[in-house]
Length: 131
Image (cartoon, rainbow, N blue to C red; front, side):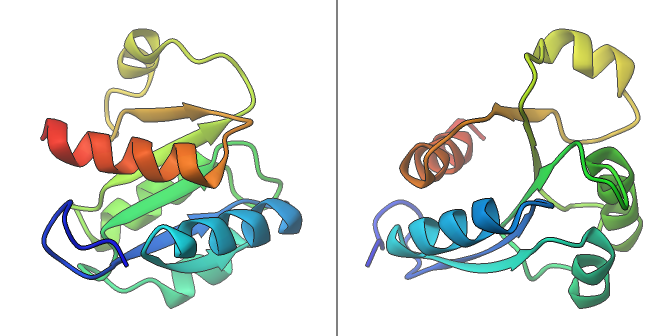
């Protein structure tokens, strides 16, 4: 169990992607890295289950059919302004350009797919160390 990186035994993550296989793979893999993961393929269901100040990190796909990741993030921020959201995308994202276009979103964390659970766990930990 991972304890050293923040002195806590585990962290709650919310993971949202419209592809079930990605949710399943990431949930299993991130749990092996010491996270507690609530995974959803439907962002509306994720919003219904969301609890403010419960999740250490929220990871969401950008391109989803019901609600895109930016709309999802805005709905999360309406419930919890301090939420820590990271966006997953299959497309090349230039973070500086995204900050200009999406300046109203407090989060500007972008991760390019494909990514392994280990790589995502390391990314989450490294962002924590940077803050």
